[in-house]
Length: 389
Image (cartoon, rainbow, N blue to C red; front, side):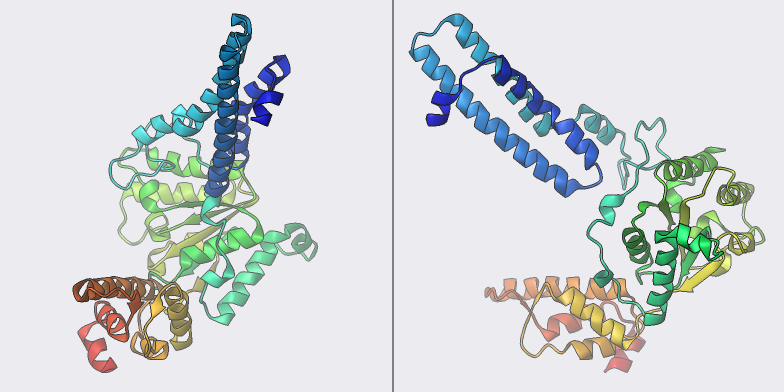
């Protein structure tokens, strides 16, 4: 009530109120890559708008009850417009978002899919994907970690590297079985080196229309060039860089040739670092792996016993484990499984626990050794199960 008594509508207050809805746009432009900060800003802004809305509403009530002039009442009413506008903007967001959502493919669509026809969406870095990632998310051998750190140092300080006569390579290839964190490693490199992060897979580039695949690839490199220094992560590299001697079709060879031109700097790639990931390095064309291109290859192996132990500890820390659960035994019997498999086992164990406690009617929210064993058997072959037993 005291605040309402002190509030006197005037030109200055009306001007300040008009600024409130305008704060939404610079804030979202500044933190376009950080969804958490956007939501926090929206929350603060809508709290301010609602609070002011209550104050203006009470002031209006007092003016009407006190027999104030129509001019004073109407002038006070004008203060409501920017407040309501602010709430509506936050509630319904930018109308462009609605248009973008309507253009997404029905299944597995991506707002940054370069294959979307007539897309009005600018390709931007996916920095929100690397905002919270840390080295703790990586369980990899020490020798590989050392190699990755050396790459990061080169990217983090290219000027110092140049003084040593070091020419920063165009990129690197991560190869190895699927599910062992090749994408996560690329994200850690981008985050630690302080580079913008672009990520795409073959299905976002390859199109059935003649010339579109090359155009999509150029668009991605042009976007990376705009936001350089940047890392471009290419999943399923063998689909874009397939060896010309492996019986590929003409469109595949044309796409590879265009990709090689982009790497060589036809479109200025200085400041762009390419990381490719593949499960089939044998299918990649030799020209792509020659010196000056993606000439460095790091093999990401299946996790060993110690790595599997750390992975189980990482993924099970969110679960309540029953007494008697021995993580070391789990690590021993899961030889040959990938990091993604172990993540899936821990998730399935939680599902098994939920089903078991639903049947028993007693909720302890704990995962037992049996829940984990049953989950593991879904990921092991019969031969592996017999060996484990």
